[in-house]
Amino acid sequence: MNSHCKPQISARTGSSTLASLRNSEGISLVSVMLALSLLAVFALVAASLAVNERRTAFNDLSHTQSFVAADSGGEAAIAWLMMSNRPPMITDMATGKVGNQTMTSMMSSSYQDFSFDVRMRPDPDPARIFMMRPRPGYDPTRYMDFFYDVDAAGVAGVDGRSDVSVIVTKLTQLNYN
Image 1: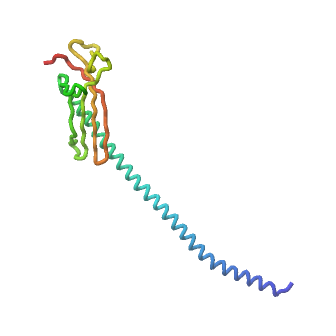
Image 2: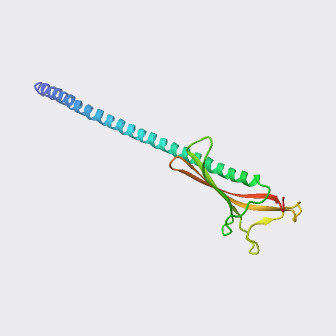
Image 3: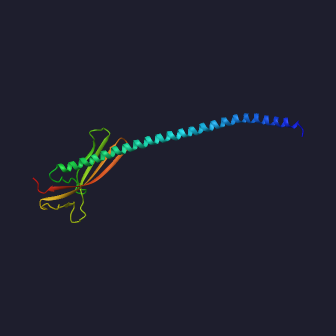
């Protein structure tokens, strides 16, 4: 073996080490760019999630406010029914409508409104038009339960709308003066 060969091998090894160092500088640039790209994608995903969460929270708030307004409309209709001593007059025989209130702003808010319609409940018995029943324990010639359908609507803001339907029963004294 020639001692002459060993320096050539080491020279090759040395030159390939220098070449690999020069190439690794390009690889580090590519890896840094890749890492920055991944961080940018993560930032975009996080921003998108934040925007969607905010939109969902706003929609939930709008729905809750409109439901509260509709519930207030239902409560106002029930209070209207309970305040009278006799059954309200039927204003439309075809639908049994006895009362309604158009959109009314709630006292605590200028962007929440409610409305309601009150109708006598139709009787499933074809011999009767509207549902009235004697209440057990009460004289049926003097007292009757009247049944009403209450439909209330509530709105809040631009997009919030909810509806509430309730069946109300009221014991009423007949021929009350």
